[in-house]
Each structure stands twice: as structure tokens, then as C-alpha cells.
Image 1 (cartoon, one colour):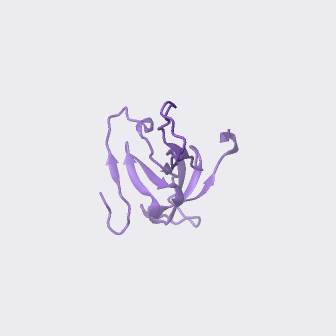
Image 2 (cartoon, rainbow, N blue to C red):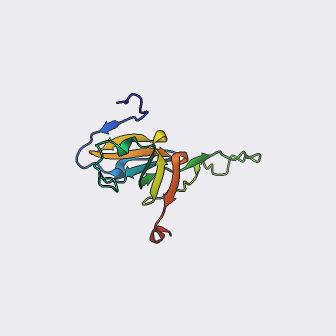
Image 3 (cartoon, rainbow, N blue to C red):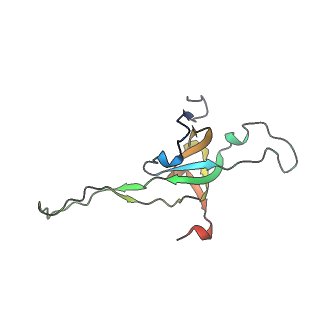
Length: 139
């Protein structure tokens, strides 16, 4: 369902109860982000109406899955030899985001989905403004 004037596409994906995020494949330079829960109260103690935080231009959340990255073109080979094994697998330049990073991203470029009654955002790499990575997650 497309919500007018928001640019947000909400997709309700209903699967069986055994469905998990492992079945989802993120394509290209996209990142699947679970939004961080925001407090319902301001620092001054005022209660915010439901949906207030969802309308902000900048959102934050944790990276759940990453796509393979930007596809790289195949190199042109002048010395084509038919007996050599052909490597037809696509090659990708990996993304900066990793699973577990806290991402701050632009809401404008994100697509909101609901999967198993949980809200997620599919965000292209160029809409991510900042990543915070814990040191213990680095290899």
C-alpha cells in the first residue's frame, strides 16, 4: 500500500510462523535495518503522539542484513582462449555497512516493510549517513 504524500511504501509480508530473516535475500547495494525504538517522551517530560518519530527526516536503527554490494563490470579480455575455464560469477564491491552496525539514515530513501509483524527499512547504501560499529564486532 502506498501512502500519499509520504513516499513510504509499506508492504505487509505474511508468512508461516517458521519464517525468519534467514529466508530474506537483500539485493544489490541495499541494507535491511530494524529501527531503533524511540522513547515516547521528550527530555522535558512531554508525551509524544504515536507516529511522531516515524515522520522525522532522519532515522536510526540496527543493520540486520546487507546486500552483496555494487556490481563490478566484467574485465574485457583480448586473449580469449576457449579451453580456459570461464568465470561467469558476478563480482561485487562490498558495502561499508555490516550486520550489527547502528545506522543513521535518511527516511526519504528508505522503503518501510512489515515482516512477521515487525517493522524494517530497506535502505540503499547512499542514504546511510553514519555508521557506528562496536569494536568487538570487527574481525
